[in-house]
Length: 343
Ligand SMILES: *[C@@H]1O[C@H](CO)[C@@H](O)[C@H](O)[C@H]1NC(C)=O
Ligand SMILES: *[C@@H]1O[C@H](CO)[C@@H](O)[C@H](O)[C@H]1NC(C)=O
Image (tube, rainbow, N blue to C red):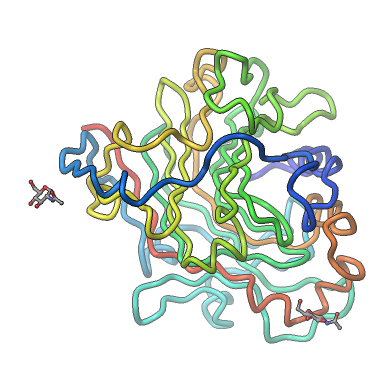
């Protein structure tokens, strides 16, 4: 579980954000350079039926309800949410499976909540723990909206020592995704670490005193988060975590490599990743272990609350919680999450 100290991390992380919803040029995690768009032709030309990986876990449909735990304590990041138990989430239809097999994890968009009150939401994490592997997450939709702060991430014990890997995270109506690591001392991004230097957010992964920003990259593809992501029926976030480091890719719908869809993934044949954290300056086994995958949506709190005013959202974050309409779009619609290991 994410420790309370993570709250401090996000507060620091959040403060330099300005003009989040209005401009993507001069904010903390500005995106420059890297060409995030990939051509369909290139990907379809590849036909990699050989995958070195073996499917380990396929989370799909009811398995998000059965093989993941529902966290129902107060939000450690101080969000204005009441995380629901499994029984209540199912009863209130905040966690359910559609007839087409899509799993929905929703924020309550049907109950009146007073200004500054808490809204019902869901946070789940895998019972199983991982020490590496290839992870493929296929989402049709993700939550977004003023005050909304969703994340798909993984975390180990004794934060930050067991590490945290943030694969998909952001706030409000931002359009590009952030990829971030948090760790104990001795893990950095350095010049020879960085494959795509142009979009580095910050290079120090370790927490030190009050500096808990973590190290990360932002995607340059303006379909990688929120509303634009949902407009194209989402896509796939893949990450490969092994002794070489951690690589993360975003594939918009329609540009997902065929080997992913056929569940025979071969990352060697994929384009340059959106983020690359090399083990040259961060020993993976030392800093990242026993991770649970986590999906959650919180509201306001340490990150979305602190950035609310500068994001171009109306009124205050506490007022946004009371506006039920906003949460119509605060839903995860999950096709599947698959994990693979080398045999
Ligand atoms: C890809 O490889 C498979 C197996 O060899 C073959 O059946 C299929 O026709 C190939 N597809 C293309 C587009 O080449
Ligand atoms: C509530 O949110 C919706 C959607 O963002 C917006 O159109 C509407 O103006 C908001 N209502 C109030 C009273 O702020």
